[in-house]
Length: 387
Image (cartoon, rainbow, N blue to C red; front, side):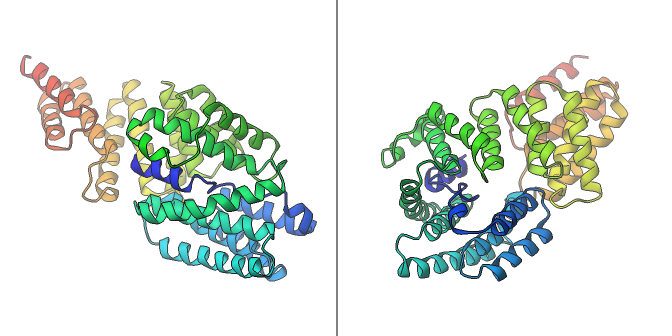
């Protein structure tokens, strides 16, 4: 949770409004604009080789503009997003962002008011902060966020009607109020930052989602996550998730949220359909559909099978979930792993296989206590001992 908090507070300054600004309309041609739109959509569609080609063309045809370099770095960012525990791309990502910052500094040395250079330098600093926070390098994250914020405000001063910029302001205003509310221990830190306004933040995000030129998708993504994680308005989150999956059907992050939102609404049938699609894409495999997301899909499919009392199939799927968990969790014991073991105990009990049920419940007690798993397993063992 500290990761989420610091990521927002330190890099909040608008790590995501970098998905471009209408300012380009004043300085570039239609081809430039088309390349950006195509490349961004390719990133969201997890078509990284195509996006690399698109931004290579941008760098070749617009060698003095930082956009091509910046969006080439965003391809690496999404590779990180798809597997946040993998640090393989971290150094490459920082190198690419530093290259953008160096280019922007050169431009600003000649033209201190160059909007594009300020915009992309601010975006690059923001994303550096986002990565540092993800890796729990809090001091580095704070420095990056601190340096990014003034640049973003300078851009806004030049073009206050820019709808894309509303994404970043919406992110800040919402989370600067929502996070201290949900996690009071962070309030002392917030005295060093401007105050937030959740209602205004949501309004700004919706404005960007509906009227921005380039930030529509990122705004919808943030609206989906805030309604899911903070507001707990799952029906609203579901609408955003459906739209994102419709537009980008092979984005595993969007599709995972769709399945999770159905789960929050207690609709395991539709959740299982989504996770079955995810599982199929993992088996192909499609880019981004990893063993980790397959493990999650197995878990929720198993829950639906247990609800339907297709117990033999449920045992098979939960065992696959456990096997994948052992593979991807390393020394950790994830909630999916612990709950899958518990479910096997429950299912064996339903099947009348008391010895196997007892074995699984005892196994739960040997694992980490995940959201009361020890208490639940203990109660089930007590019931079985009385039979």
